[in-house]
Image 1: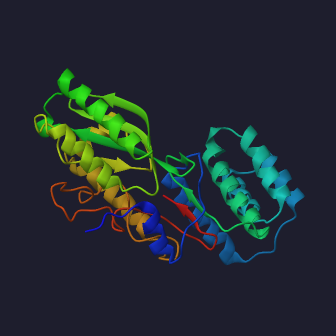
Image 2: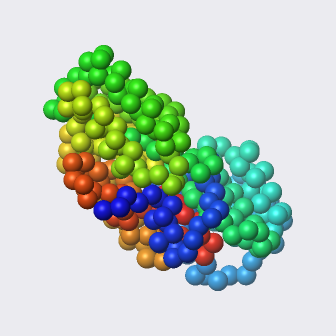
Length: 301
């Protein structure tokens, strides 16, 4: 079966060619994205009159304004096709505390898209993900582990490090961080949209395993967040409580309407993703990721 890259997959989902893709650098966690979309839907269903920008600004910067109200104000501003609204959000984002940083960052992203769209600029597809990215590259968090949780030797660590660096760079990717634990290694890297993730990691596993078959074919991969060691170890060892947690979250994401979310979740709390690298027909396809689209083709992952 032909390997598919993410860019081709997005073109299939949007049913049109993609020539200009912009990935927002700042990562926005999927929980914030879901809440933002849910609140947006509620606000638009009310169909209330647009409030004056000065009033919205005053309420936004008023310390006595409730948190939920401020979130709603940022949503209203983000859908206002006025540069003044963008500047208000930008000013708030630079001054607000950490409780609002992700929310205001997402509002800034939305506002920028709507303003550029209203100006009739070149059509773009925007991607917002939990880990962000740069240029045409999305940032991913991967975990490779040993067979039977056998501790890595120094020789094996050296092989893995060199192969990760060589292969990811070969596909015009960037390795940002490699951290070894006793029997697994976490990798933070950026990979271009037009390259297949499973092809890259199949190659890494195959090359490493030529020298001893020491790597498991179970790969954790996500672009939503960096898991802590406890979560990684629970996932690698099939902890039922952690698996249920992620399953429940995936279901809550998929419960939103089909015109808001694409088909499935690209996140490795799913036992099926990258499940057998020896199968020639296993490829990265539209069953392996979660994204959302709205009228302006803003794709959160």
